[in-house]
Image (tube, rainbow, N blue to C red; front, top):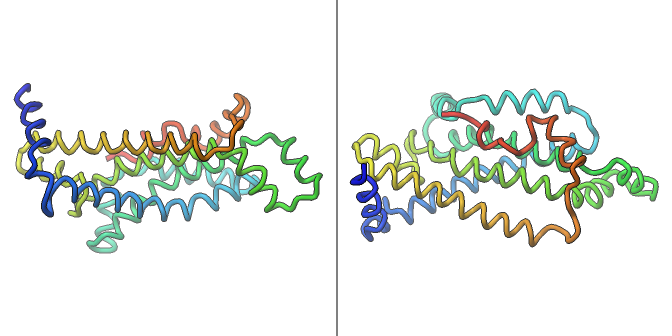
Length: 247
């Protein structure tokens, strides 16, 4: 067992493994590109829907049911299904991962808007604000902390699950896991796993710093507002990374 860890360190520190078309730098860039593409599409779908549901309250029951169903889908099975239906290439696995990424984004957006005190919203309407002004000037700024938490959860989920696109096969850090399994190269598999974990931790630290910088000063989540929507949409963003799809 100790030899595996020693060999893994040797594999990670070997300069030859950091360059070339199969190098760690290339695979890392591919992993980030896949993750970014999935997130852009998922945000474009989930955030507008979450804003609408949170602001109006319409479609909440349907959203809860759909989000719960999507979280139960197996990641690898969904990827294979899309590959069989749409053929090989980048977009079939991307769309499969988008389906799994929408629930935490939808949950976070809806929970953030719903966490705003109704009295604050009523006061904004009493001042003569339109519904769009209420949404973007009152609800979004006050619910931004919860919404950003859902986004962080979705990002971590994507970074973890995008590894399985290497099964089709495509690139990314997951390539080391599948290639290592075929070749029985366990140091390569362990090294790939450590790289994925390190990437997820690094990205989350960056997002945590960005959250502190971007949020308006003085905003916080009270216990009542923070828990209000969490029970509605499958416990809001917390735990979505675990439930967002299983291999």
